[in-house]
Picture 1 (tube, each protein chain N blue to C red):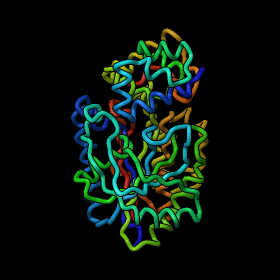
Picture 2 (picture 1 turned 180 degrees about the horizontal axis):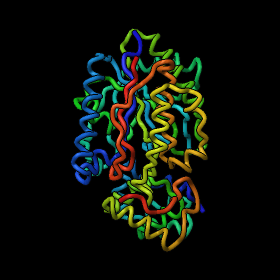
Picture 3 (picture 1 turned 180 degrees about the vertical axis):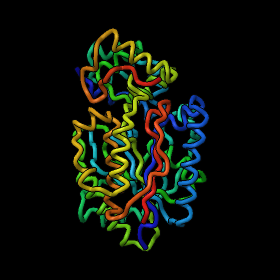
Picture 4 (picture 1 turned 30 degrees about the horizontal axis):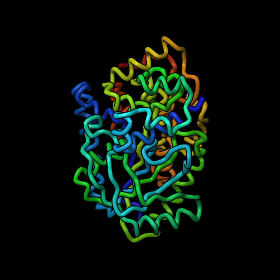
Length: 104
Length: 272
């Protein structure tokens, strides 16, 4: 489990357009610089936004990664709900769901 | 001079980014409330606006997370988010490093305060400025209180920070405005997005309007997380404004839960 580095990668991507471009062109070239386990690597590369949410990525970071990967807002919310249905509640951090229903 | 204006407002990215998805009356009335806040702010003729915000990993991360940080830059840039996603064009925002430095030095007499000469604004500051200083012609001094990466600063320290900030404002000749910006109850960027605890919000806002220090400082983080969500931690920004205006009551000019904006949308002004 290396949630810290998963979030650090997304934090850096959100801040740095050049890193975003490099990542979108060749994900492995960027991912090799972070200490990540197989589950995290798979979720990042797919991308599996629902799984990243379940792993505990803070929503304030994850929503921007989802947007970068082309998710519209309703798709982002649905991806997290799909992750909950498939994998159960969030494993770490403070962004665990209460009922997963929200209002939209 | 002293503090000439103080208030609070919401900053959720949906306010601008998902405005097109909102009920037209929700959008129109809340944006109008922001406009009225801008008119009230401008009427006090401030020389600078201190924005007490709760940023979301635009500048600060868990590798080196300050509890409190103030900007000391000549200029700032934002929003860091995709402008199309947020609905706000990227721009340069003027700072005032000399004024920042004088305020920081006074605040540091009471509260350990980090500083930053470089700062990328995220929606936490860019959304309020989009409405309050839309021409970006007022010097801005950003402040961040860590409300995202626990452990978080205790609420009584947020009050103390506000008190220290007031002392610093009273010590400079410039006319200073302060706006605290955060959510009250909300579960942003989660599958619960749009959930709002209206009763909790109204109770907290009553306490904020009364400048009821004891009531506002009684919340534990566990209670806030349970009743008001992760976003509820941002009450620290409201409490800091209350600390800066201790003894003054305030008025909530607008409150309405707007789920597509993912927060109980709020505009409040302290009666200085």
